[in-house]
Length: 126
Image 1: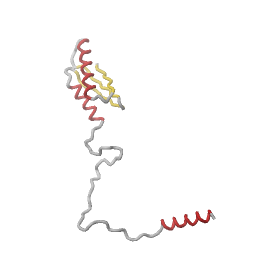
Image 2: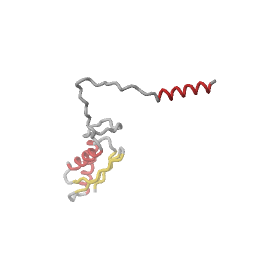
Image 3: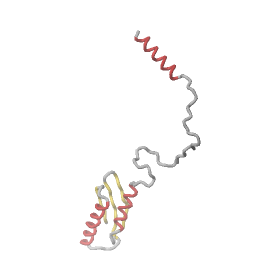
Image 4: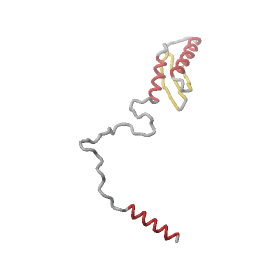
């Protein structure tokens, strides 16, 4: 009895799925034109902000470089960001004494942390 009931339900589901439908309803209003959406926008659902000018890691790297450029006698190098860590490489462009280098290093580190507080900063200044 149970097998017969399951067979009837299965056959009715198959027949309902294979049934020929009627013509689709025309839901457009008279005089309404089709809306054309641009196809070149980022449609990735994982991004909360789909604008093309959204902030990304490149912007953060540029901000680190700009902060290093504000310190006289220091030139920015490679900036690497992985997760919450940021490695900022810079080099001295002038010959400074050991005391001056230490002061510049401390000043630069404070400036970088203030500019981008969300990263754990690793400064390599040679």
